[in-house]
Length: 163
Image (tube, rainbow, N blue to C red):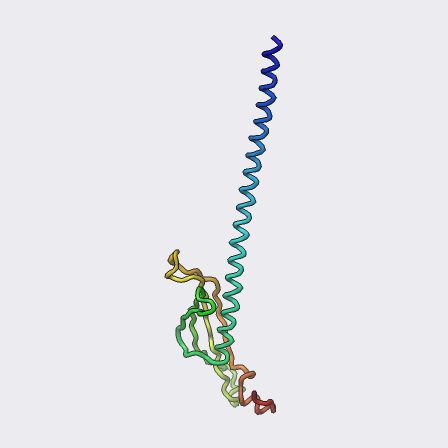
């Protein structure tokens, strides 16, 4: 009878090893799923960061262009094509008079140039894309003033050469 007992002991030993392997595979599977979830979250965050950075650079270029050559007041919309056709913007551009109604001591001064208010939204994607919607990436509002850098009268008064 020593033979059957030996077989039972071997079977129990192999069954315990099999159970250890199954538990370690389950732990490994859970750990790998957590790593994959972390990786996909990191990739989405990196993509979103890249979209925000690109939208910021494009919007800055748009505003700098408007400082030099102001657009017609009103609602504006376009894409940043051909360099960035997937990015588009909607903007509202309007002049806003500066009023010093409660400062009578400033009445003798030359009138101040109006501020030019700008509200801009930058989008990624298009309505014609596979998902059928575009995503707002950036939104801001700012005010522009006439810059002395490009003012001819300022260059004359300061004796700066024209380029």
